[in-house]
Length: 387
Length: 214
Image (cartoon, rainbow over the protein chains, first blue to last red):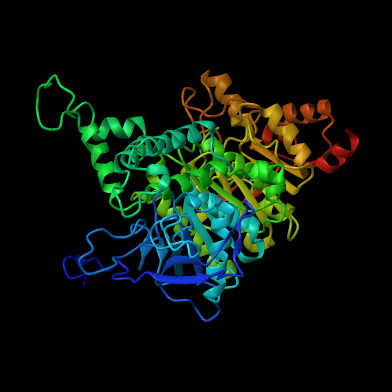
C-alpha cells in the first residue's frame, strides 16, 4: 500500500506527483498564434508518469478537456483529497499503464492551472492579462505542446489521446505534426463543434459576461465573478449528462423533504447537484479561462481550416482508435463517424467503436470498462508495432 | 445485419479457401469481419494490410485485441467513402444473406475492390431442399442455424441465383469455388452439380475489370 498521508493509496495509483513547468518563447522569440498575435514567454504546466524507455518510443501525450489540467493522475500532495482527472485510466496496470508507457499531460495555453493564460501576469504591463490575452485556438494549444514534447527529448509520440476538446487536440496533433504521432485516440469528439454546442458555450459565456463582478475581465485581486462562472458550469454539466443518467441519478427526488415547500429554494436533488457542481468549479477555475477555452472549442473546424476533412487528413499517417458513446448528445456518434469515414477514405488505419452507455458525454471520464479495454488493447498493439 | 461473433461454426466456413486465394501483402477489406479471426490469420500468413467492418461493439473490441483496425458500422451504409479500386480484395464471407441492401453492397464492393470474394450458404443444397420438401418447415441446420423468427438471414439465395445475378449485372466471375465443410472445418471442393451438392457458394469476382467496363 502506498499512502498520501491521509488516505491509503491503492497499488494502481501513481502516488504523489509534482507538477512541473516549462517556459519558452521568451521575447523576442515569441510564439506566433493562429490569430497572428504573438505570445511570450509561454509556460506550460505538465506532469509525467512512468519512465521514458531507452528508445524513447513509449511516450503517450494525454490531452485534457475544457475543465481539465496537467494533473491527470495521482495526488499533488499528502493532503490532496482528489486524484487527477483521468486517474481511473492512468497508473500501474491501468489503461495507460505507467509500468509500460511514459505518460505526459500538460495544461493548455489559455488555461488556469499553471500554464500561461488570462490570469497570468503580462510582462508588458506587469499585471494580469485579463481580456488583453490573445485568443488561442486548438492549433495554438497543440503548437505549445509540441515545444514541450521536444523539450522532453521525444521525437515521436506513441500515442496522443483525449476526450472532447482533448480529442480535438489529438486530431490536430496528427494533422500539424504527422511525423511525430504514431497513433491517436480521439474520444467523444468532433471535427467541428455543432451549432448546438456553440450555443451552449455562448450561454455559458453570457452568464460570465453578465456577472457584475466580471468587470470586463478585470477582476483579479477583487471579487471574482463566481455567480456567472458557476452558472456556466451548471449549464455545461447538463450537456455532459444524458437524460437517462439524470433520471436514474436524481429522478424527481427531493433533497431534504418529502413534500413541496411551495417556494423557490432548491428542492429537487438535481438542483442541489448542479449547485454543488457550480460551487466546486468556481474554487478551482478562472472565469476568463472559461471564456478563452470555450472560444477555442467553438473555432475548431477542420473542414473550414483545410477545405474538407479529406484534405485535413491528407498528410496524416497515424493509426486511429476513435470512440463515441450512444448517449452523448453533445458530441453525437455521427460526428465521430464523419471523422472515421474521412480517415478510411484516405486509406488510414482506423478502429472505431460506438460504446453503449447511459452516462452521456462524460463517459470517458468514468470507470467505463469497454473504453478502458479498447484503449488498452489498441495501445498494446501500437506499442508492438511502433515501440 | 447480425453479429457473427457468437457463431464460430458458421463463420469459419471457407477460411482456408479465402486464405489460399489472397496473395501476399494485399490490401484487404473484410465486411462483417466478426471476431477478426480471418483477417488476423491473413495478416500472419499473408502479411496483408487488413481492414474490417463489423456491426457489433463486442466484435470490434475483440478485433482490437488482435491488433486489427475494425470499424463498427453497418455495411449497408458506409462504403460510399472508399475510393474506387482501393482494395486488392474485398471479402463478404457468409454475410451477403443478412445484408439489408444486397444490391447496393455488391455494387459498392465491385467499385471499391479490384477483386471480390463472395461466399454464402447455398439455399439450393439438397438437404435444405429436402427439409422444406419433406418436413415442410423452414430449414434449420448447421448452415442456417436459426429459427425463422430469429434469423438474421433475410436474403437467402442459391448458387444458381448468384451466378445468374452476376451475369445480369455484368459482374465478371473469375472463379467459382463452391465447397462443403468437412471434419475439423476443412473445406472440401464441390466437384459437380454444385447448386445441389455444395453447402456453400463462393465466387471470386473481378472488380477491376468491371470498373473498366462500366
